[in-house]
Length: 248
Image 1 (cartoon, one colour):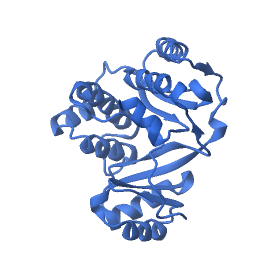
Image 2 (cartoon, rainbow, N blue to C red):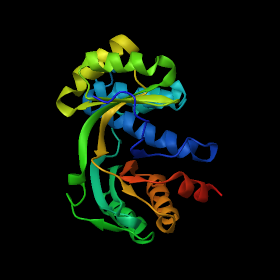
Image 3 (spheres, rainbow, N blue to C red):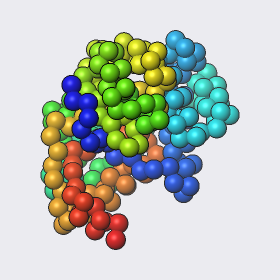
């Protein structure tokens, strides 16, 4: 169990800038509504709903918005959302997994395919890239909950497999089958996590050069901006020089 390596965020997600706030809240509300519909509106007995609410609170989503999203789960005219997953390749051979919640599979598939193809990528068949990722449970805490050593010890005691920390946060991962027990144990020692859910963690990362970096980030941004897309995962790394070139 590696406790002190540099934190790497394996999910691509832009920060909640003001211009993106409404869209972000909409996605968070959709997840809350679907979680409440599937497992019931009581967060105490619905782990997915509890995680969705925690994620919303971490983004400063107002309580009224959260309550409306839960109430909407019992509405008779609620859309039938499906969870769908897409896999494909981006510029530079980067593998990408897209998770979506949609009420129209044809629309979402068409939109996702277009975003891949317009930005130097291509949508693949189911299973075409997921073999390069591991499905794991993830709990994310802000740095303020404690030192890397404290969180590492708590994660080890809870039965987690890995804990990575940086100056902003701690990310703890565990086997899928241990997710519920590890999450509950960490809640006892560290409190409620900002995020607690199943994710796709890449087994290895692809180094992206300057020629492909801008196009890749444009594609990931386009996918992330789609109303139906909830999460985007990609197995890439960029050098500091390439990152600086993107921000120049």
